[in-house]
Image (tube, rainbow, N blue to C red; front, side, top):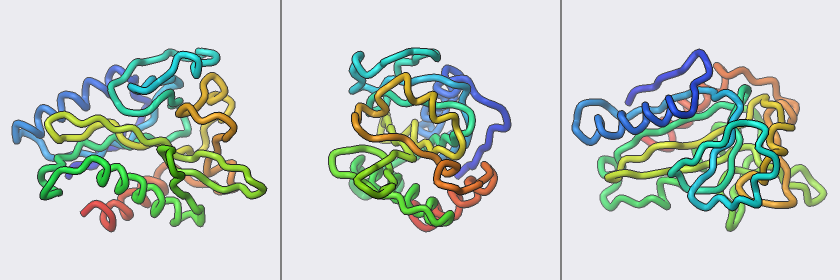
Length: 207
């Protein structure tokens, strides 16, 4: 397994090109599986279930993508973890739902390192934080695509992005719920600290 960290923001087309090439190389036995940690410049992506009415104000470039899910914002201060993994190597019967469940657990366990309780919500993709008084806010988005049982795309965790940038969309099509970050929860976490926690949690959940 390769762990790659980008030190400068990666454009979405460059990221997609890298992932598609890596999936092909993994399938051909020419490259190991990979987790790629990066940040994007501000942009929106539209998953396969995206509804145009959820694109409220496209103040940033919008990219169509083949991953599952709806509209998502990516930008500085948000850690994106793209996972290129051959499910046939790790599951006797490849199971996409179980893989997504494991991605969710990976994020949940990572957040625990910073005393943040993240949870799943029935019927919703991603990880949510209960702010009390019936208020729920999303801290992590998840979107996956699979080709020949090799995954790509992955998860994002809001560390310290500009949360106002989410206002241009209905994030993941969920109305009446907000978006939070580690910073908005009072947690001053660096990308390096989050990356270390992601690697540690990965070893517990995915290996």
